[in-house]
Structure formats: C-alpha cells, structure tokens
Amino acid sequence: MGNHKRGVFWLIDSELLAVPFEESATFGIAKSGDNYNHRLLWDHVKPRKCNKPFDYYPRGRVEISNKGKPIIYMNINIGEEHIPRIMECFGLTERPIIHYDGSDHYKSYIDR
Image 1 (cartoon, rainbow, N blue to C red):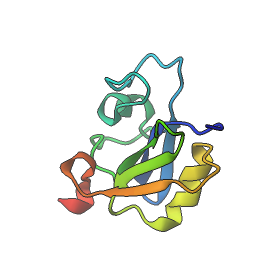
Image 2 (cartoon, rainbow, N blue to C red):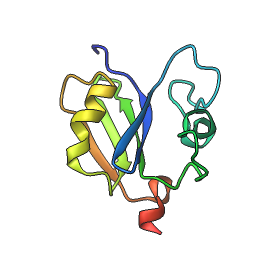
Image 3 (cartoon, rainbow, N blue to C red):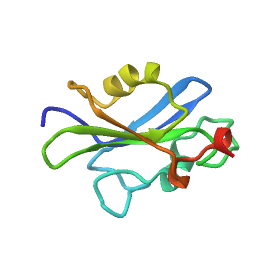
Image 4 (cartoon, one colour):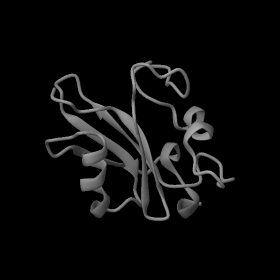
C-alpha cells in the first residue's frame, strides 16, 4: 500500500488545505474511524480569520481501496491542476482514481 494516506482537503482561494488522517486523531473523525469528517474537522483546521461554514469551499477526500489503490472523491470545481499537489500532500505515489462528485455531499458556494 505504500505510504498512501487517507484524509480530507479543501480548496480555499486556489490554496490547498490538506489534512492527512492521523491514527492518533481525537477530533473530526468520521464514523468509519479511519478518516476525517469535513464538518467535524473544520473548526479545528480552518484558516485563522475564516468565518465560512465547512461546506463553503470546494472540498474532497482521499480514500484507499481495499486493494491499496488511492481514490480521490472531490467537488467538480477542483481542477486537474490541483491533483499533483493533492498527491504530494497525501503521499500518493501512483496516479489515483479521480471521482468527481457532483452530489450535494461535495457542493460548495460555486455550485449554489
């Protein structure tokens, strides 16, 4: 599986805010227990002067399939040009499967 990390990210004014999952995490943890929940994590990681809700910015998550393949689920407004940086932040050494998710789950201010 390599050093691929699960985690979540936001795209804030063209800057990537990436939060790789840490086994020792005590907040923001998803029900699955092996990744973060955007809503629960936001208050702990948002930029200092930010007063926007967790779902304001385009966001996504990195998962690792049971075969060890990285999969990125993300808002349709996050461009291909951000994928190398996402890969770098989550230690992805092979090209991930990209799943653009147009569902309400990843909607941001751009989609509303």
